[in-house]
Picture 1 (cartoon, rainbow, N blue to C red):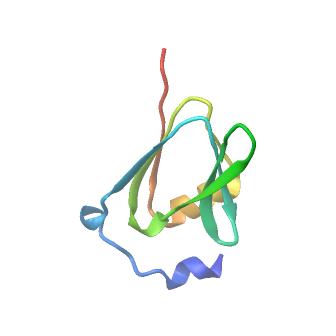
Picture 2 (picture 1 turned 30 degrees about the vertical axis):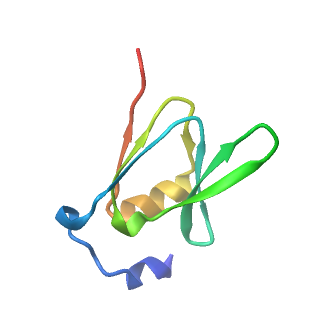
Picture 3 (picture 1 turned 90 degrees about the horizontal axis):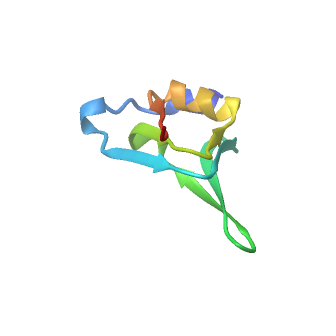
Length: 85
């Protein structure tokens, strides 16, 4: 957790990344926020650059761990849950 104190703040007006994730699992591993996707035979981990991310949109079939949520909040990322009716 002390690693986040070394991050230099980036103004929200300078952040450009907005991610929409669907049917995956968002988790924290080694101080990074990752999302896990499942293909037919294997699993793929993808990194989310939280320092440059403004908003993370979580669609249907997506789950997030509490530790990942803590890192996103400390980095100032807006997390929104969206879906269909």
